[in-house]
Amino acid sequence: MSVAVKKETGPTLIPFGPQHPVLPEPLHFDLLLEDEKVVGATPQLGYIHRGLELLCDKRDLADYVHVAERICGICSFMHGMGYCEAVERLFGVAVPDRARWLRTFWCELERIQSHLLWLGLAADALGFENLFMAAWRARELVVDVAEETAGGRVIFGSAIVGGVARDPDDETLRRCLAAMGPARDETLRLAEIMLRDATVVHRLARVGILSKEAAYRLGAVGPMLRASGHDYDVRRSGYAAYGEFDWNVIVEERGDCQARALVRLREIEESFAMLERIVARMPSGPVSVPVKGPPPPGESWMRVEQPRGEVLYYVRSNGTRQLQRFRVRTPTFANVPAMVEALKGASLADLPTIVLTIDPCISCTER
Amino acid sequence: MNEGYKLAGSGPMTMESIGPGDLLPRADALGKEGWRIVQILAVSLAEGVELSYAFGLAHELRILRFVAAPGSPVPSLTPVFPAAFLYENEIHDLFGVAIERIAVDWLGKTYDVAEPGRFDLMRLSLPSVEEGGR
Amino acid sequence: MTLLPMSRIAIRNLFTKPATRRYPAFVREPFAATRGRVVIDHAACSHCLACARRCPAAAIVVDRQAMSWRIDRFACVICGACVRVCPKKCLAITNQRSRPVDFADLAGRVEEHRGPIAAEAPDA
Image 1: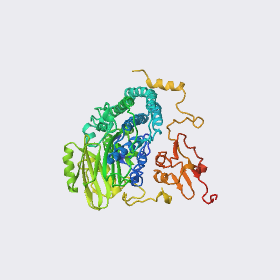
Image 2: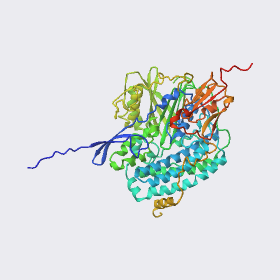
Image 3: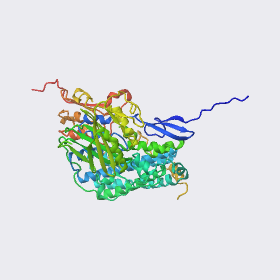
Image 4: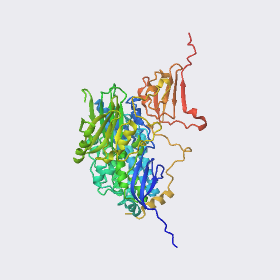
């Protein structure tokens, strides 16, 4: 006599995160799996919401920059700078030339250190720990330059309303640039490995494909958008000194993890080249102007290109030195729907890789 | 826009006041022209929560704005722009705006904060520094 | 394309000195521009409370009556707002970082400066 066993079939629901070895910050997914394939993913945020925007009317607008730059550690300088640019546009104040060029210098420095950090984390997500350690060792030279010119390794602290707080002289800038030479060479070697090693290629190529129109429709920004074939970079709008020297936007077509990796790695090399041009063209002069008195009532919408993509800073004033509202729309906030789309159809083992190639910065997303 | 109210930005911008019912048709028209949602912003005002929907195309921003009176329902943008669910969940939870039929709705648990309630900048107050507060 | 590029790096790592320093046995000299900690020339301080009001981290507590200036080193983020706003220019950022504090003595994280004791009557 045979016993008929009824088998349960259907998708399985498993949790991913908030604690996971590959996630630099807490992020949760409810994953719907058919065997090993992801058929649906529901993200869940909210593990590190600090309510930083609430502080904007408790601090003088000149002091709030120090809160804004602590929204995130990796994108710290650009948060501070974006806030300052938004406030300066509201006041109608023009920042001195040297301050604009120094801001551009520190922006590109931050882009390099952020992408090198990403390189290490992405390699770690693949299990390639040697590359992770080598990338972060190269990154040390870059954060040392940040400390030497701006005062802090991670939180640069040099953006203030009206200009910049530090004025490294041209000799220091040239010396620091030369000191980063080994980091640049090492990055080229590591990029070679990341893009050519057979195992890494197998894990990255044709994985997590985001089509061109899905990337646009779902609001992807930054390298995620550019890896899917869109030529869009907010730096072209010409804030700081970006309109005054030549630089290239890196675009790739395939939209898979390898294309996103390629965009970021090429951006590191492009940023090193940009730093050379910036230091060669650095003008002299004062580095800040005083911004006194209350701002006019009004609002300011400022967009900046962070390492992870386009950020939008919204500043609203009711005519006093305490801002009425401050809102940051960060790139990972915009990339979350695109990330969910890229996860569909992926195998469970590829999930950490895809999440890392999006370069999530959840502290930015949740402020 | 009142006289003496400044609108500053990093590129060309237009701002327009609309009614809540116009939101979906306007958004649909903009979507067909290639605009996409850049930000949905909420500001607490005395008369309600002011919602600004910013659409972007290349470096240009087009902003549609209306004030949601307390309790009045607001249509969700997700039928036209599915990526809007994240903004709408946050505004629904932190500002108490009744946005209806969000495609992915976390039902109040976007941020799971200790004291759920309205994100009302006007109401919160902290003791001043002289009183020994932070 | 080189053969086994990562293995070469890994083998070279075996024979070069470590990339990390053995802190606290070896403490690296900070750069001249490093934001180490906030220091005060207390004799010049007028206890106007400007720094306490403007500190984004609320790390400074000033008592005008007792003529004391106190900073919580763990709350201070060395942003420099107090330095910029001080009318007497008695605050500065030095490149030496604050000392670590023993967990058993967390009160040691607060550094206090006191002026002449207010109860003392000035000499006639």
